Amino acid sequence: MTGGRDILHKMKEKACFMASMPDSPDTRGKGGASKRITHGSHLVKGKSNHAMEDCLVCEFKQVHNNDLGLFAIYDGHMGHDVANYLQTHLFNNILNEHDVWTDTVNATRRAYHSTDKDILAKAFELGKGGSTAVTAMLINSQTLIVANVGDSRAVISKKGVAEQLSVDHEPNKEREIIESKGGFVSNIPGDVPRVDGQLAVARAFGDKSLKRHLSSDPDVAIELIDNDVDLIILASDGLWKVMSNQEAVDCIKNMKDAKAAAKHLSEVAIARKSKDDISCIVVKFQ
Image (tube, rainbow, N blue to C red; front, top):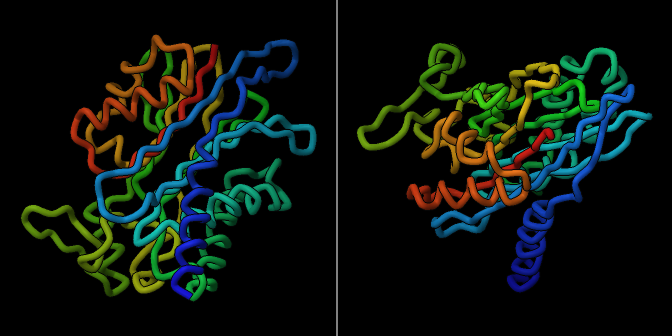
């Protein structure tokens, strides 16, 4: 039985890495005003003893005559099973919402909540761990819908100026909400603030043992894509712990190849002594 579990574990780990393979550059547009959009991704395992816990989605597809760019970072903790589940299911759940094209923000929120309920119901299968998430859905190269729970982050660059689109859900920022639910936030010297002394983010998927004090409610933002937009970066906190939003944009603003840009950001984070898993997606508008 041990050998069977090891094989299954390796298959799931491989699935996370397979999703990092970039799609070919695409040209997307509508009404004759097309832009050339390229996208690429890169994952690097951190220096911890556990297996790689990050997964991602980085692809274009057509759904109901809409050209969709689907980009997501899932940063698992206490294993990668929840991150792997999100990789397979979250965008499908969003797109299956009946009003996804007319009320995308609320459809996204409902899909986040329903996906979390599914994960909690499958806790015996998926384990007691969890995952942060940041998702970006680019609709017809014109509208970007960004949602997130946790501290994986989405940053957009407009004429070289970085702007954060997601919200870092840090325990200290949501202390009152956590305490109102009967939880607490620890602040031990030498450590980061943690929900109930355990989790370093205030919102996440899964984490059944903490769910009474932990939210899966996403922040959702809408961004219109105009000629000022240069690029988008999605990355796990392995990058953002050692690099500011503007530093990340400055690192790659003159690079034309999106995959090379994602790899370069990861290499810079490693050079700055990041020890966490790093997953990074870059979308370039040219």
